[in-house]
Image (cartoon, rainbow, N blue to C red; front, top):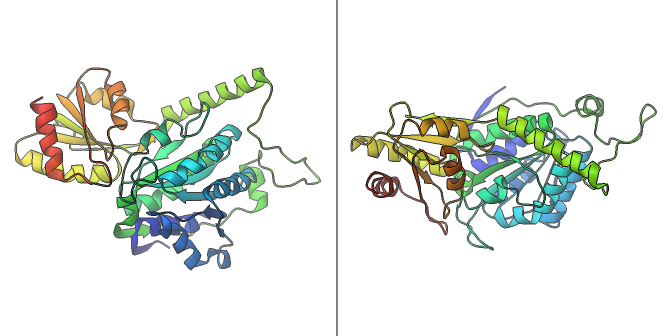
Length: 360
């Protein structure tokens, strides 16, 4: 049955892994996401559901353990924060090439380099443009609440297996560390090997009397065959762009200006809307829930209605490029953000709107 709890975002997503019937979590501690591993270790799901929880010797080891589990058709997941995701990038690229489903959670901290342990959104390029090598894309879900941290664990597995692709849940230090009430979904059973054979006939589950072992690899030394494979991946990403765009529109119907923000920045923008509208400025919010696929069409349509858009990101401005491409020059698009672990205030965002868009 569903259950209501007060939880940190990191704890909520860890609990959701268990309830989603995950087979294995492989991770390594790094602030501000260490509670994911700590919570799972404390819960000992291997004694209740059979889920494996393992602290690997490194981020590189963790993602390759995920690679192995995913190759067997298992529901597997890892989590980290920015520098750790960089270390996992090669394995993520291998899994995209091998068309293996998994979840990768990034609770973003400031960079570049080791940077700060404070919140940031500076990993947008890393997740949406392919942090590893080669022509590949990840489905990227951006939660803006503790509730969505839990919900997106279940949704992420569904999308990963539907499209045979890694799915990134890109949170940030604010969402990961904050506490809110969350309604947890009911416990789902783990798949049996027989169910895996039906759900994922491509998986390697060992040689059996009725079939040979499947081979899972991202390596192909035949250029023509590799070209066909990459085109196949590209067609899959086009299908995802057509069918899996998710977004939220807040007070956009009569808006003359639009904030575009995701994650914790979108939460702050909701207060900015109240402040701006009290001053007579009609502003709304478009919140991308999927960073890939990006809500290009809805932004292009909004550009016919409004006078300008302000992207709000805890970065120097990365998502703004996708917004500018989406609106195709129809309206002015500017950026406002804070970096280094600093979080913008609602008043700062309104002031930026007045200066950069209305008065600019």
